[in-house]
Image (cartoon, one colour):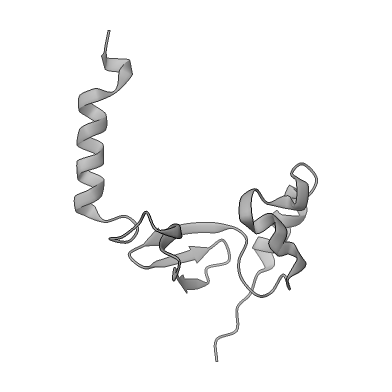
Length: 95
């Protein structure tokens, strides 16, 4: 059985509660009614179907970011296409 550590996440949550209602924006704000050790509150990175929290715990994103990430996070083909589109149509270049 994997035991997760949320020390950094809980520190950030306590800091955020001072300036953000419930400490977290969006749908997770209401989740504070659930146990704080049930899942992470602050992510650090993501790749493919996985994401890591600020404490280094790895999770599978079963929700796929609520649908928009069909190919997973940081897909090299998708990222390259997005960067090419940004470079070709960035408003800063439209002078």
